[in-house]
Amino acid sequence: MPSAIISRISNIPPIQRQSMIQLGVTIAITLLGFLSTMLFTHLLGKDLMGVYFLFLAYFGIFNMIGDGGFGSAAVKRISEGKDQNEYITAYATLRLLLIIVSTLLLLVIGPYFVDLEGYNMILWIIAALVAAFFSHTITYGVYSLGHVGIFNLSAGISELSRIGIQVVAVLLGYSVAGLFGGFVIGMILSGIICIRYFKFKLARFGFRHLQSLLSYSMWAFLIASGSVVLTYTDTIFIGYFMTNGDVGVYRVALQLTTIGTFITAAIAGTLTPKFSNWSAKGDLTQIPGILTRSITYGLLLAVPTAAGGVLLSERLLYFFYGADFAVGGTACSILLFLQIVNVFMVFFGTTLSAIDHARQSFYATASAALLNIVLNIALIPLIGIEGAAVASLISIILNAVLLRHFLKHYVPIHVEAKPILHIIVSALLMAAFIFIYKQFVPLTNVFLVLIPVAVGAVIYFVVLFKLDKELHDEITGLVKQFGIPWPRWL
Image (cartoon, rainbow, N blue to C red; front, side):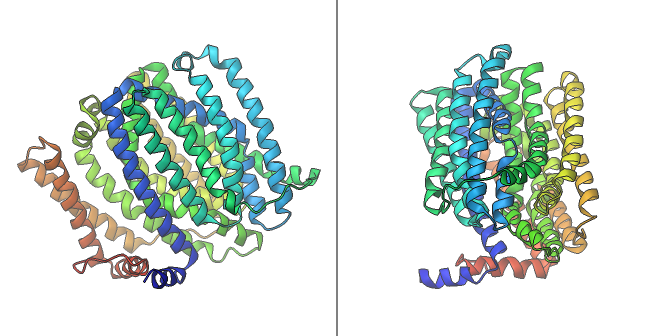
């Protein structure tokens, strides 16, 4: 029986197979992440959660400096199939030097940032930077060889371990230090898991290898810088203008919206090596069809999540995370629409970088990042965390528009109008049910909130699969090939 299932899975086209595996891993990890965050918010409160989210923000910034864009460059060059040992050795050397620079920079400027002074945060960030050097050197190498499944599996196990360690540590009374420690150990584990598939050998690299990495990494670094700004500017400015508690509320609200990103994250993670390899061979003909279908699948979850979440976000935050977090309901509603735009931004950006046009991707991301900084400075003092959400939404829209503008010069861009219309209609019918339910049933406990969530999901998928036979058959076939039972009524 297991061999039969494996045989069926092997017959699934690589991108679909890897996406399904990644989707399953992503769903499992995210659900556990939600549950653990709910536990942490109740045990630690919004202030300490804000401290942890600030740790993640600062780590993201200094890790970006420590990577210098060479991680993306190494994946790109190694995936092209030439001088792989030389490129991974060059990458590891450059990464080590940049981690040292990043650490020294952190030690120099740390005393000038109040947020970094407490909870031994500087030492924890340094530990995380060292862990990232080890982990990323191994995992990026494995990923660039096309072992996407192994890469995703290691990431999944790493995340599960992180969550488990953090839960145990918090329950034992280690507070926010337990969250820091779990994060660091989780990264180390991802590298350990991938070592078996790390088939590289140390090799002497030359100036041309450094030059090749540098030519790509400069733009990759600038893109990463813009992405980090888009990801963490709101967090840091909320911490600056407001309180750690407000940071905690905002980031928890943002986490809740990531329910709509499962499919996008799963598919996008499998596209870069394939698109890069095809681009290196001068064959872009397969990309438009896959890109178009990827957008449809990304919207498959993002649209209904936004439609239902807008009506239920305040109650979900209240019952799942605690009364202190319910004030994030409005910000959460805004961020749900951000995740719809994020589908387009992720796929356009992934494709543009993978086909070796990172410069244009940087132009788009940098423009959005600068706008994001200006809007956060202007809006957060006026309207608080809702201002941060609005700033992020507007910035992401600009990024997606600019990415599309640049990408269309290299790859035809289309959207599947009919399937997307079916998704929208199904989501609106689901939202109509939730709205009517709220008029007659007071949402006074968590069970009464979960009923419209569950019934609404059933309504959405039943209507969608009735309207769109092609989507129904494609998803049904994929699920059955994995040996997963499929409900007959769907």
